[in-house]
Length: 85
Image (tube, rainbow, N blue to C red):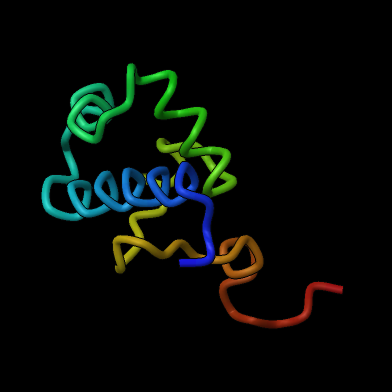
């Protein structure tokens, strides 16, 4: 896979969370974290931010159309694609 075993397990857990979010978007973070094998919600939030560069709340607010994709920051601030400079 090209990943260390621990990193691969982290990716699998994150994918588990993302799949459940797309199925049940109103699910609580603490419940999802425990189902995916995190010790608690704080542990989940730290790993989520380290893996994605954003918080779970921000990710949910973006409402990605695909469960494992988020828009680039440049798309969020410049939706028309025009040059801001």
